[in-house]
Length: 437
Image (cartoon, helix red, strand yellow):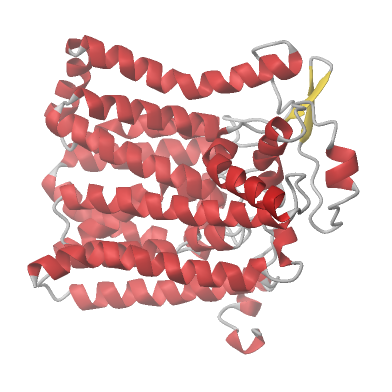
């Protein structure tokens, strides 16, 4: 029985993968639905691959003839180009494309063998993006499960945590509804960073430090602001003593420290090389006037507003904070470290010039930070075992899962507007399942 229970999370991950594959194929792969798989920012993330491997043009000279004319969709059209040093370049970083690369190459080989339209944007390439998101989700779940296991979370609570994370938050939508966005890829690397960092602070083996550094490098290559995960190290250490020992230990493991430095810098350097090839300059400001306004953050709006509030549209994030109480009882240092890390993340993310991040479901920029919320939820579930609070907590979690699924469906079919929700609109459609279908 013990062996069967220990295998439960892995069996569950397989089941999750099957369910999401079926949902994705039904929603995205048939008819002309594939055209909406890669939209908005995702077009820019993915464009590096056809630009490099098919059109051999980092200055995107193929954009007008192929993307604008051949695959134009007035509702989804998005121009991801920017101008720097007098050259046209891709506005976005290349990390998401690097994560999608194996799937792109398979799609390209398939298309060439089948005599299809091998321009990098036809149906096989779009489906490959969807498959990439599904695979990276599985990778993220495996890393998260291993981290929770090493934190002494039992298989039943780990399994429940994984179910809630996938189906009870906006991770579901950004894996199935908009799989080309960067968030699910970032989540996988954040989960690896958490696991490797935990192992470094527990055992101080050089390999763990190198892996954690490489994960940070990949996260920065995907979205530079992802580098904030480094501020989670005090929390990941587990207590003040281990944190200080881990920091000082880096300089005692000289070889591992140097390898970690190289591993962490290598992915961002790739972006600088791409800029050099496309503009002749290593340093490029592709975002222009867009940027962070740190003196004008919107923390209440990004967490609670009817427009995009994280805790309103995906309240499981809020419920997960119940795990701070058992964490506090175990280590006040670790609990404070989590709170301060979260506060900085909220301040930075809510300081973006468009704090609601355009068309999005809930606070999409928090998807990558889900491992930090789910570890708290796992702590809460573990602490509630054998108490009167266990059943109400599980019931509340499942109720919020259902709410999230209803609101995800409403968002996909425009009952929840992609940008312009307010109090009246929200309560007008709240749980109106009679309008679905």
